[in-house]
Image (cartoon, rainbow, N blue to C red; front, side, top):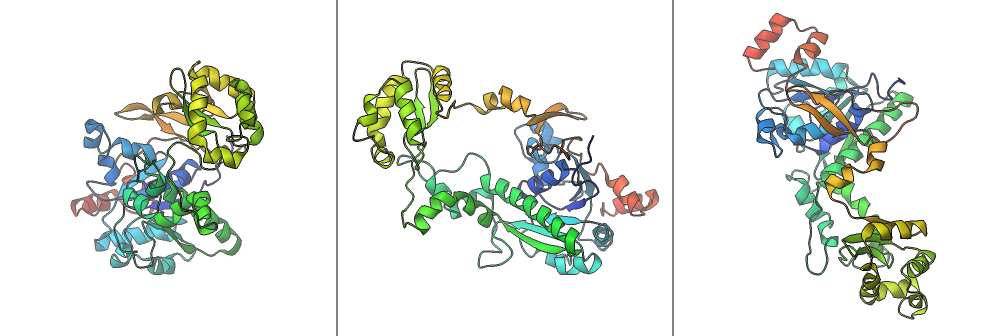
Length: 399
């Protein structure tokens, strides 16, 4: 097998729950040695989060399993003098450190970037937080829901009946983690060319807002306030969700020729020349009149039949699937988006694989999420701690 692109890169992962672990997951899937440094006895909070109580009780909750394959776990009390000494030994040979504490926590521990770079000038230190390390809100606590509200993201979701509306998964945490992984890769490239390490400041609030670039551009440039439109696409019509004879369909006729193809497939050629719908911008203004006319024809057949007809005529369309059905699609299986991983004491579980497909340096989920402290003896032996010393550290609750 070809060498993974981040093989021989060592990452110290002090993160918890989602944003930070999602960043380090991508590094681990690309071959980095990611060492989770967890609190003795309890570990990452996500170990207790999930819908299966029996897994939470094992400190292997589904929320933890989802974000931590290919990683190693050690426990270390970084508040203790002995713990700090061990931590500094790890830092000396590390390439990357990632943490998602509230700003100021690492300073209070005496483990700030300014301290650590004296030990390892090439260290890339990535701090992920809700609001970033600077600014009037930097020290405020934040979870995904809070950032969704403060970013304006909830305000542009929903429709006139239900607004504001939260996105159905922790999108701000997730994109914050992706932004962190992207930034770390760029910093590693910079270090390869210059030898310089650096500090990276990632804010979830900063990370989510550019994802609304099109919506925000209408406000920032054209001074047009966004209007919640539910399942309709503000850039075109017909572009959104429509009812069919047996369910719903997504249709995205964003180009004029696609609109004309919709009329042909649905056998409503008269709509092409109807002054209410003839041109794109006029169609957008009259979408409430257009939708029932289209749905009257769509009701005559089922979703799958319409999807096949529309796609065959160059109109992007698709069914609206449950998550269960979405994960079972032949396309998803072909792309190996999920991979079964054997977890001792639990069995084989499907986990998301690396979705970027490298032809020379492929990433892969090769080992299960670790049990708490599973690799403590291995990692500590690597920095010269003997078995007797490890036993003594355990009695002091240092590891």
